[in-house]
Image 1: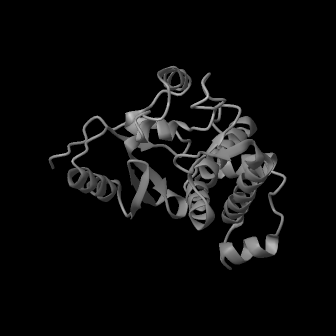
Image 2: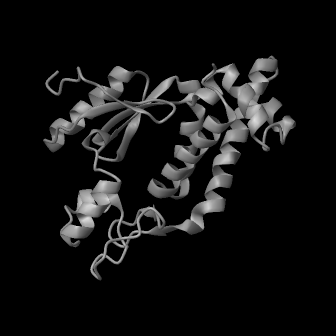
Image 3: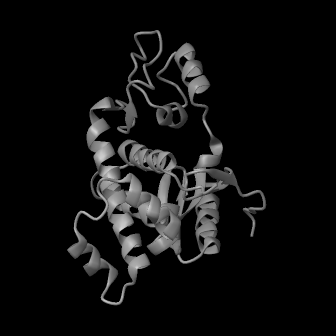
Length: 229
């Protein structure tokens, strides 16, 4: 059975849109969306692009623009790939427009969070106005212990998120690196991205786990990563 199907495509669009909505704004959100879509399996592989064609109402909305982006010598497969890319971009933005009213900015760190998923704790101090990033970054100093434990049970803090490498660039040809939830840069190889994380960790004297994020958003711990190289 193919890994590409309409249901998984919709979940992938939702995953990208949620991360863009919660963690990015303005131009940085636009950049994140384009990088995430550009390196996604539904764009890289022709079989994925075929699913986008079937699943997205935005597929092929502007063939003149698609032909211009693909180039004069593009074959049918390349045109489908570019059309899928443009459609997925639009699908992500549509999801954000349809759901952004369900999110609210955290009073402490400014990030957005889903009101339904973060209804808050039972006390007046918390009052629902926190996100899990705050529980990590601020060590819970402004929240009662009951609220902290409740939030952690629903969405455990994952230290492995602190250092990540992710496919990016045209058709996943480059690698983006992040450390402590902050974007470091985009690199030609995984090795260069890992070296940037290693440098940042040694500068900060903070050595968390480092993970590879697949184009489906799955996390894989890099067990042989060495901070001392």
